[in-house]
Picture 1 (cartoon, rainbow, N blue to C red):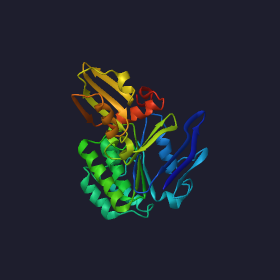
Picture 2 (picture 1 turned 180 degrees about the horizontal axis):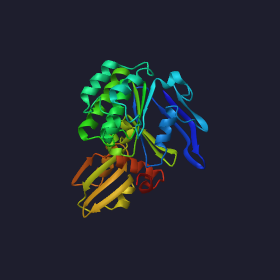
Picture 3 (picture 1 turned 90 degrees about the horizontal axis):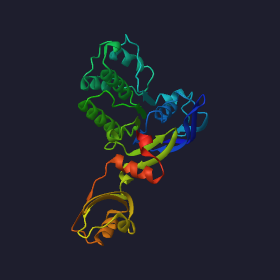
Picture 4 (picture 1 turned 90 degrees about the vertical axis):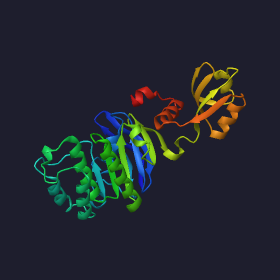
Length: 300
């Protein structure tokens, strides 16, 4: 389990993380979202033992990763900019890493090399950005880590490779109980993949939810009321998060279970009504605005 308690990290006068508390369960896929500079990459580097926090603590199975070689050997971080010596090839990097990671799986490495369209013997400096990212993924997965930390992992990957990466990560989680923490600014990329999402803003954790609980108590409704109903009338029976109306057609998001919301709508005798799915981004916006945050400044 990952536990962060009042985790704080500063770079000079800038506070990158400010008293962050969160937990990540083993065998889960945990997503960190937020705008650039929100603190996502800093948090990953602390979990990898690259940075030492100024205050608070980050624990992996009860231990700090800072200056803890045996623990760090179970963790792999694939940074946004994957660095490797320019003259090295994927094969050569694999041989090097096999000496540092006790879980290194040469058979899995060869299998991954066949699955991804990356030339094993090509110089790293000659690879495109997308192929460099794929090389980093191959090396990270072949290390068979207990914890895999991924920073903007889907950037530069085409749709086919993105789908392959998600499949491989899901297999590792299901078969080995590997834990994945990935950071991204793209909510849409994460919504069909993560178990839990946390939103960081200016170094603070402002929202954390399990995805299967995210939209249980938010309902988007489209309804037609022959005697036109205004927002004020509906607001007497419903907690409205958003509202639009065009003539007799009303589209709104309300808080409550589906049964509770539809019962309130039915009390106005609509000629038509239905519930529509909410995207993850819409759920986040509703939750954050309810907490008093300006979402345009956070996700813009």
